[in-house]
Every structure is written in C-alpha cells, then in structure tokens.
Length: 253
Length: 96
Image (cartoon, rainbow over all chains, first blue to last red; front, side, top):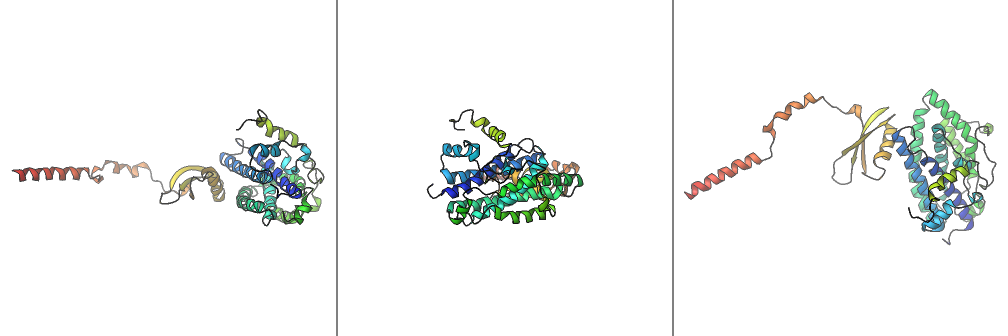
C-alpha cells in the first residue's frame, strides 16, 4: 500500500474509526430495537458502516485479515482517530436515532470529499458508500418524518437533538495530517469545511438551531484535539468489541 | 401502523411471488422496511409493497361453490381415454 502517504493514512483512519464505531453502536441494537422491521433495517445500516470501515482498512493495510484486525482493534486508545459522537454510549433509542441522522448527514458530505481523490481506490470506495448513504439517510428521514409530527415523540427527539448537538460537532475535528492530505489531493477539503453545510441540513430537518447557544450541558464533550483524545465511553465500548475476539485471537471465525 | 404484503420478482420471466408481510407507519417506511427485511440479500430485483387494506378478498363462500364442478377440469385424461377406446374399437372392427 505504498501509495498511501502518512497524511492520507491520518484522514482515512479518522473515517475508518468513525465508521467502525458507528457500525458497532448500531449492531448493539440487534434484537432490542423498538420493532422487528426496524431491528433488521438498523442492523443492515450497521453492517454497511462496518463494510465502509473494512474497505478503507483494506486500502490501508491490504486484504490480510490479521493485518486488518491489528489496525482495526489492537491500537492504543491514543492512536484511534474516532470522534466523540461515535464513541458515546446511548442507551435510549431516541438518542440513537438522532445520532444516526446527525452522523449520516455528515457522513454523506465526508464521502464527497473523497470523490475526486488522488488515490483512485478511495474515489472508487466513495461511489459505493455514497450509494448506500442515500438509503441510510432516507431511513433516518422516514422515521423522523413520522415522529416529528407527534407531540410527545417530537419533544423527545428535540431533547435528544439538543443534548447531542455539542458532541456532534466533534465530527468536524480533523486528524493531524489533514492539511497535508488536502495538499496531496487525497481529500478535497477539511472536515471543518463541511460543518456549515451540515448545520444547514440540521436546520432544514429539525427547524432553525441557535448555533451560538449550543453548549455542552447535555453530553460531556471533549475539546478539539485533532481526534487524539478519547471519550470516557470509548474504553468500555472497545472492551465490548473485543469480548469475543479476545477469546482466541488466532482463530479464524 | 398498517400491514403491508410484500411480493418479489426475480429477474427474467418469473412472476411476482408473495414472500411475507410487515407492519409500517406509512408507505415510505413500508418500502424501506421491505427493502431491508426481504431483499437484503438481493433475493429479488423487483418489489411490490401492497397495503393489505387495498387487497380485495371476498369471504370463502364466494369461491366455495366452484369446488364442486368437476366438469370444468380439463386435464385431458377423460378425452384421451375415450379416444383410445374409440381407436381400439375401430382397429378391432378393421381386423374383422
């Protein structure tokens, strides 16, 4: 994988880790989602996100499973590049649904940054991912279309939104090598450059948000750190992810 | 919530076949759920999602009388048997 520079690795890893953790978060609803049809739909979306992570991991280390597992699971916490939104544990379905919407609204914009990538493989992956994201977004929108029209449900969704908005902004914290990756043409812009378009999407979906008044009294929100700091929920999340794998790291599942 | 019946068609000349049902709050969620519940492994490439309320389904008395009309069955066996008997009779007469 010699064509992947260190800067490219940084921006790819930031995306890998977000996708991997969001996929994990979604799959933790298998069997306990509010109703059967949603259980299956959400599991499919989680699978897609894990698939995106797997494709990007393969771009980084090749197709050997051991190499992929080493990078995907066995790094020091400080070497992960996930954002806090993907790391936090949300036991309430309403919070989870809002996170799903907020994340996918940004994820679609993120893939667009890879569409004209100087690394052809990344451009190719973005085509597939974008085709899947349109269905993820349609799913989130369809549920919100119904719930936002019911007073009680709307109150809960809006409470979730305001709780999660501060931590959602961690999505736009770029990894250390991002500036160089832009110069190299790996991505066409920074994560921070997407925030304006994302905020317009949020306003359009939920009604105008007073963005100057967004504060962190909802979920503890880490300060921007170029994704080098982990949320408190990260360690238990990673432990859950490793629970089966660590039974025997050498076995082929 | 409403119940929707799901039909799938594979490529080619296969007909649409009923594959199951699901509950959904509206048409859009029914389509999305159908996609995820019944074609997530590409089991078909055409999908019909039909509100059960929109299916016309008369009670059993409407169709029951037709269970007792053997003369409407046209398997051809009876005709073939008569033709065979006739052929054998003609052959027997010719031999004489």
